[in-house]
Image (cartoon, rainbow, N blue to C red):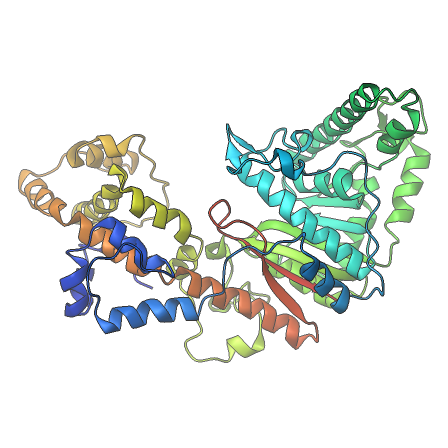
Length: 510
């Protein structure tokens, strides 16, 4: 896959067909947006047939991204028809609903930093994008739970436990989280207790307002919900099912030093007990992990983590279902890196195809959002010129140091769109640890190319049109792997791609 930042270094413009260049160089940015859209609302040019064919192919070989309605009868019926339970019994829910009533929903889903469809009790500590994601994935996991008969969910790569709280308090599921970073568990535990208190207080106010005299039964319903169990452990690509289950079954011992437990059987509601001192609670946890039906989930499990989740699911009889959303495809290991359990390809089918390899650049590109960039092209903001700045910087850096390795330093320059190229370049050179002086002749050459900024944007757009094709190849490889293990699976777009570009959940149950 071509690296777009080498636009000037490798003269990428000359690699395009002449008929494409003749029309692309004359297109405004709003017209370019049509290359990333199914419709052609803005283009005022007659495009070459080959370019139209390219656009058609990128859409034909890409999965449709429009999110499904997880509340629809059709989706619920599909889960029931393909599930392992004759009757889809709803998980027992608490009186606080996840979503606000339809009558209170705004036509704008995000406003003032909040995702409005979600009940405000569940929004704390979470940005709108994440609010949308956990609301939708929570619905999907609940459907998967009902279809598979599994009530215990293991959330892998859980971070601060935002999804786990939705599953616990919104869908009444038992949850164990597994997170590599030890700093997240204390925050997750604190947030769990905060949400329990918030919901209890909300419920009490609601019942008092309705003039209900006795609120004990309702508040006890909240208190009786077991909080998520948080495990700190790194899950590696070579993790075996036995290793994984051992982690899940033994978290009471490995979390003793750090974890706190809120147990309704001892003292007041807000009493905290060390796990090693709360015998009854420890026994409950041990029994709960002898469940014969587990579900795995991961919200944007990074790199090899999603392939690892799928392998553990396929190899472990106790795990009955999986609902996982991947991301950061460029961080996956590949067969070329001599990894036995590579992130890509997973399937034997794809690994035996000629030219199946995907470069780092291709996998990185697959993480970019067509919807967001299409809107940028329509808005035509000043920062579109930064593509040209970045390509010129590439030429300048390689002129100064031909052996320079890019990627080692993350290059972020604030308010770069308000700068001239010379100032931008000097700041960038300094951040890269290079001499900031620019030869006058070199600077003159670079500045003369600034007028070609629309060509850079056009090339970037053409390249980006391939992103969903690459992502489709990666996702289908994962489906093929499960199929080779005798497991049927489904790819379901569950998020609004304009809010969350990686919006496909891979769902399967045995």
